[in-house]
Length: 297
Image 1 (cartoon, rainbow, N blue to C red):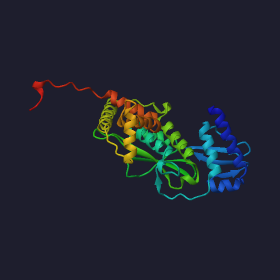
Image 2: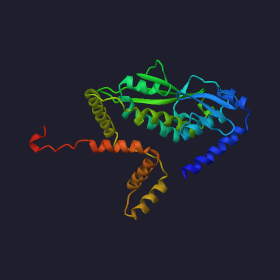
Image 3: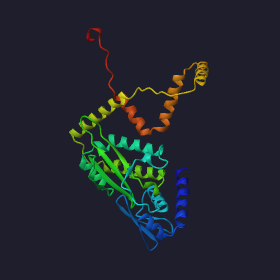
Image 4: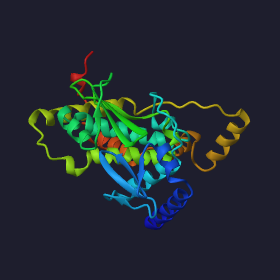
């Protein structure tokens, strides 16, 4: 099913590109065009895209390649603004963009933010990233395409606070890719930064201690947020009717609302985040009850 969907999307991308003048595409996308092919850099690789059949050399992963074709098709030449946005601030990005934002924060907290700075730098540079001065502990700029930069900002973990960070885009990004494509770009970067091919360094004793400390701190933070109260407004007559008929089902309004909130949580929150929170809950040590003689007066 996924392959059929991909092939259909690829065919549409090819048809759309064929409708544009190649020189117009090159001018708006900031690429070079010669001998029937576009030449551009993407995440540290220089590639050529042959217009006649949209083949890319050297080959890229299929979703990377498709998103690059979408970039060539959608680019309108808008200049970079120098102002950054999160993925959730993208046009139509509240749901999908927000999911990517949360996933990026989790990956930084759990993986990237506990790396030695030199290892994170090595991984970023392997994707052609440029390191930049920033208010964060670490800032790298990745160029998915000539006019589509992505910034990674990281505040490293210490013994008091867990790591934190985010991926950011230029405010002009919606002029070049849809939110679906933007999420693909963010996911490509995160996947390559955390991929198995990067796990070549040896974790020393201090690093293992840091990982354990950070995980425990984050779990305590999650525990402190576990119980919360939600208040909503609802018409009084409808509320009375709702309570009456829910009671006939041997349930309560509060119980049904909790079930609805749980279903919404499972639908909206990324699976990786749910698993991490679940792991934290399981790792929390169970306190033994104090004996009466031990209870302070």
